[in-house]
Image (cartoon, rainbow, N blue to C red; front, side, top):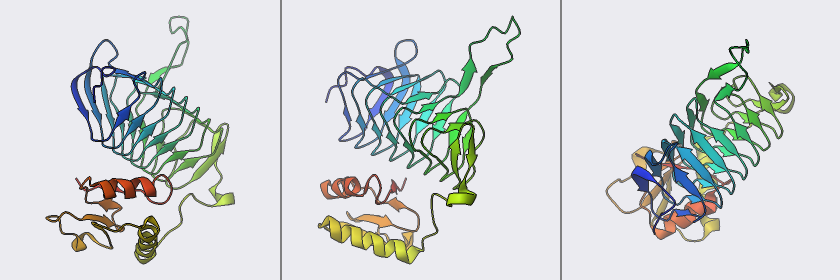
Length: 262
């Protein structure tokens, strides 16, 4: 596939990735220095990625009219789902972990800049945005340059101005933790329960050819052509067979999320 709408000095685009022809991917001034997009990704209509150093992991989706921009690197992990009309600013640098969901019309900002500092405006800053893994901004969220720890969550319409703690749920403007009222995003699940549920999912999928569910990395043979899914590490041995890709798409976005062993 030709990617005439992608301009980069160093360009890596994985297998089975589709970029709509009217999307734009380039650097701030001309070619980007480095664009890396993983396998089985989708970048939708009228998406603009204007960033000199951009990386997107496998099985990630960026929906239509999303804008990602900034001078500093923007790194997004595997299995991301970024809803339509989202803005991700990387002027201060942005890192988003694996398995993150950013609902439609959300805005993630790593800088604040407009008021006249000569006139005495106090608000001028650029700060790295650090989003952990399994973080979910449900939709219409506005996020300041914060650190969001793994598994944290912001409910629809949240305005987040302070760091988000591990597995806590936030809501409101300004957003505050409501986990003491409604609980946490994730409950603890035993390895055995995960193993049994993944076997159920594989049976529901209906084609176990060259796919194995295991409970430990010790059960994996890295020399064969089997796609092993290890429930203890949430990683899989990536073979990119047609059946593996179909199974991954069957699991995403809400049954299970795995990242490749690297």
